[in-house]
Length: 327
Image 1 (cartoon, helix red, strand yellow):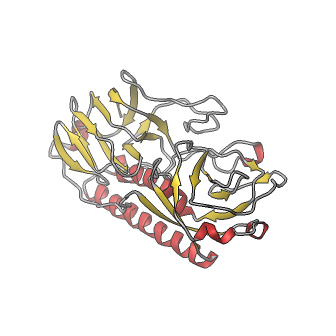
Image 2 (cartoon, helix red, strand yellow):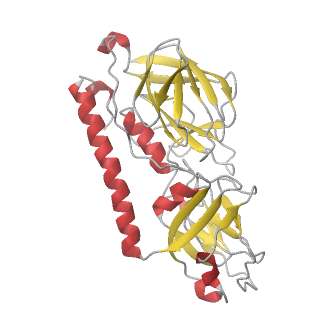
């Protein structure tokens, strides 16, 4: 076991992140966690970690860092290129970074969340067994220039030799643009609106007043006939609400566990991950599907993740890297 120190040289907005605190809504605790959970899970899988391990989430910005020890890393999500000592590498692969190397991950023009997986255990403070930031708990670790992170890992040239192989797993990933096509099931309050079907007949623009709690959308000439709020009740992540202003609000992973606006649709699990990559000014359309189709979509995604996990595990074992695997 070695302890590597990662030194952040330059960064816009990045945090230490994991999959959050699911299942605690009954305590009033928001789930939070990585906005794009599929990309975060794949980042960990590609370096042999448990899917829920701590990693780095970078939002709409570049990050530059150096390491004082050999590391096995991966980059998933919006980023499309990784530079290691000025040499370009593909994202969504398993990459070797040797001691003293400098890593540059440019910001992307499309999508906004990138994830950096690091083999081993990324150290960080935890609340309720999670490092995930929570604004209401006033908890979380944001990275700034000069931040130093500790990673405990079994990876190192002493353990495996210096002839590092280059794996080409080509982990599944989305190709982002300025247009996001989402799927949803019908919400419980669609009949409370006079013209609820308008939501599924036009595109919406993402407003700057969007964050990890909720994404605000504006349509063209949208008149849904909302005249009053309803009693507050529990709402799921991905709920599409209609406030009296006529905008739409998509509740994301930082959402409060109760709300009082009509819920006209609920995004599918895959669309929740996808919409977290939308930036202000991007456009969104929502299509209705039934529960069977939603389950089929989820099964397809989970099948691809499981396949990647199997391929990575087999490749690591064939190389004698069992000590690097946490699954």
